[in-house]
Image (cartoon, rainbow, N blue to C red; front, side, top):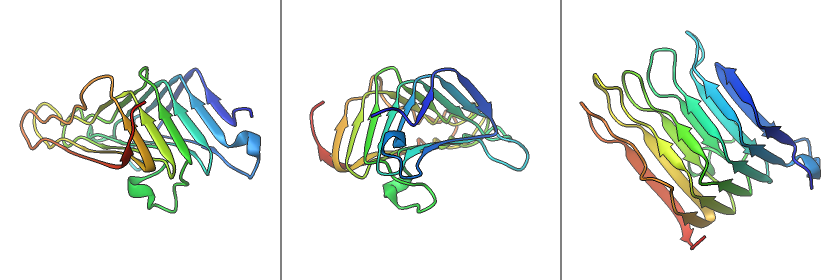
Length: 179
């Protein structure tokens, strides 16, 4: 099948949401290989959502999210935490390549949150950062899960550091498999 949403360029917005839906079997996929940057505004936080209801999300590019106040933003790939947010449709399969970078780090304040989820299988080989700001704040929250299967072989250690606060939190779930 084809790709419902493909991004190979640059997307800059306060919020970026790429969603494939409408019951079109050929549109139930997202292929993200470009750069998406959400920096927030005074009223809208920096948030990136890549989702394909019951389909496949492939993240092969750079996602960067930061709130207007300098704190870390939110990046959701394939669904939200534990797949439990009805407002964010869950992908059946989520593939994050070794080229992929997801950065929800803060310039100041607390690091943000990054969730990589699939109702079926998640294969993760990318990089994630949700660092706190250099002058204070705590590290962010990261979850990488597959409800049924998880292959977790990151290209670099997750960075949830906090130079002047508490290190962030990482959770995962699924039956671990080799890639």
